[in-house]
Length: 252
Image 1 (spheres, rainbow, N blue to C red):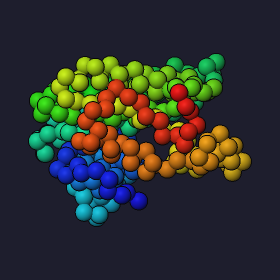
Image 2 (image 1 turned 60 degrees about the vertical axis):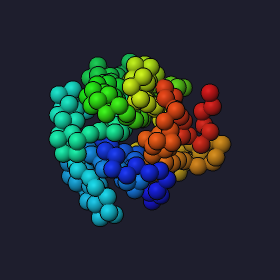
Image 3 (image 1 turned 180 degrees about the vertical axis):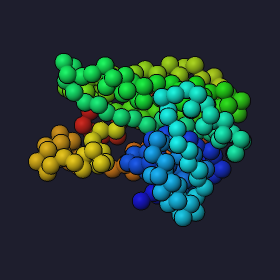
């Protein structure tokens, strides 16, 4: 359940991959802090449900189906957002997919699809909002990566590479945009309770928990709370960083 932690009143936020899981939690948390939310995902039906929940809780939200891997699609979303609310203050690049397989069995399309959504999607988002944020002389960009991008994982070469790329992109964009009062940070979740982890059997879940010092899987709200802080004025002197939300599983 979202708990208001930062004042984002009248800020305008775009959240990609907002139809479920971590993206849905981030959208709801930002809304609870006062932001107006543009929800982006490919599944328009699920987006509408999230939008209706936010509105029923007193928030302001719009949903737009879009393909983050397509620059024109993302640019159109940004244009429509500015036409409606006049500005963009926050971008959360959360959209991501996995197409797992060992390298000998991985198809080229599996590699390309993951790179296009996970890494190119972040590039498209940042490129689309950079000019409006520069015009506003302020902005917050938060990219959702993964601890897998730091430590790798067998059978996830495409996913790990895409998430590692997000960390490099975050650092470069922080250096490019810092002089314009735009911060760029990344959040790296560990094992989070989502549709994917819910499919694991109890034995595997217990094995995962045993590798985590805090002894539990994370929740989408654990990630959303940090994103909300990074989107706030209180985080104005933080940029170019990757923050792990993993219960201590990876310490670097």
